[in-house]
Image (cartoon, rainbow, N blue to C red):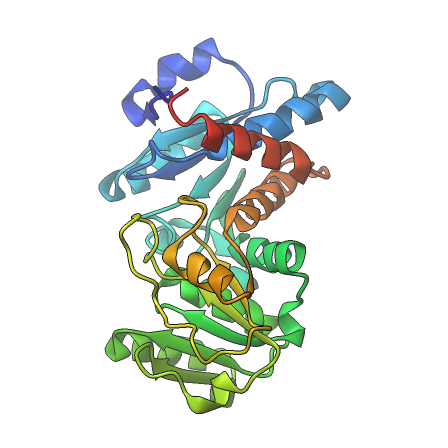
Length: 308
């Protein structure tokens, strides 16, 4: 079975038995995370080149929303110097930080924390990971594409902000709930020109989208996490040159990606985004270039042997 996550109450004895610099991902739930396999594979490579990283390691720690405020200073006292955050902490952590960089503020969330003597500061590497992932897998640059983003949650906001920050002329946002979509566009409208953001219901694709030849569709919804989930959007009527990127990486092929494949559209899942955002976080913490190839190898091994 996969190694269970650490618990806050067990960290004192654990850390003193495993001296070194601590890095970790916090979440609830967190047992499914493969982030330790990615980071520890890259840290092994780093430590082989530089002995200064020999004592570094990356853990996964189960932290509930109610525990987060107490957990962050406790982790710093124990020697943790870098933290990744996943559900439900990316937004809720903001009031607990000494500072947040501008890109993370635009995205409305942080996924990477860095400790110094004054406290924890927040960054967001999800947008970077998305940008690198679509370029690696689909051969496109965000700023050169017409962008259609599915969803209205935190992942959709990060994706939209990254596209607009990179100079995309226009981004279409589609969601089932128009009320939630309105909340997202209101937040983004405070940071970006409103004419660059167009919204629509997922059940009613605007005709102008169907005529685009350089369209990139990005799924930022949770539809696809379960094998029986339907596709969040009907791809029929879109150009066969449309590229499709699903942030979900497990399962490797969602209903959306299957539909894209059947229509001859180039497509990819979110494994590359996961790896590149992780590599960027590790570069921030170590100040050293990080091998994404080592992380890809760690990720693929973890997914190929989920019960080991």
